[in-house]
Image (cartoon, rainbow, N blue to C red; front, side, top):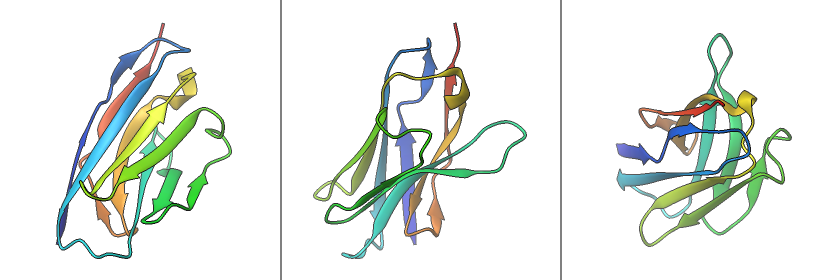
Length: 112
């Protein structure tokens, strides 16, 4: 079992920034991929970004150049730095571990 605890969501104006954090605990294996997904109202959950334990990253086209995913392996924590936020980034953001475990979600609202 793996437990994921997210933090950092909130309300921000267009063009603003937020940083999400997700800490994993439990049965953490050395080879793992952590990531962020999001789900907007009335839409399916979609990939935002993933990062493997030793670095390779993957981003959705819609966030490339604006979002940066990173991780601290010593803390089993993954971060999502979100810059130049747009109205369409509004969603519940979910942390994911190895495509199997999910966090409870954190709301990100971009609004003027």
